Image (tube, rainbow, N blue to C red; front, top):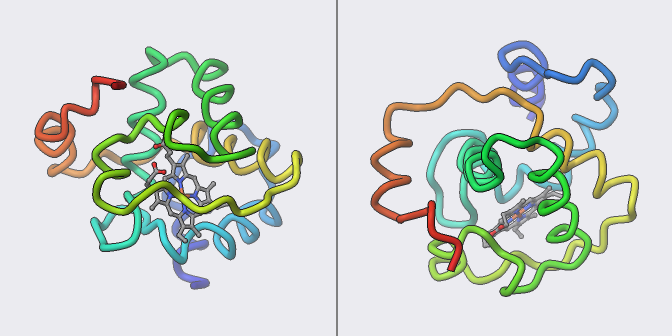
Length: 134
Ligand code: HEC
């Protein structure tokens, strides 16, 4: 676990300097059990995919991506999801009962972290037609 956080802290460019280590540790504890950083797994889409889908669907507009993600995390429902193929594979993400500070902080981590785009991502993205919201 420590290793992943170290990776988050060192390898990724955290664009916003005000995301502090405490938030990253909390994010790791609450989110990383299902969401791997890069690897496709059988629980949930990897963080890089969530990040890319939100930024692309908001045309790279950070505040739009933040708003969509906050709305989803406050109370996940099928209607609010952007990642329809993931919903088909895994079902809608459970409601983790996050408080508003957590919602804000974790959205920031996911939206504002600059992830390296792995080679498989573009093909995967196209195969899932993730650019379609419905
Ligand atoms: C119990 C497993 C689990 C945990 C823990 C979990 N997630 Fe998820 N998450 C999922 C699954 C499954 C999906 C894909 C289905 C969906 O989109 O709802 C998902 C999708 C998402 C999405 C994309 C939603 C969409 O479709 O638009 C976001 C954003 C997200 N998770 C954020 C988080 C954050 C932040 C945390 C930590 C607070 C977290 N997740 C913890 C299972 C989990």
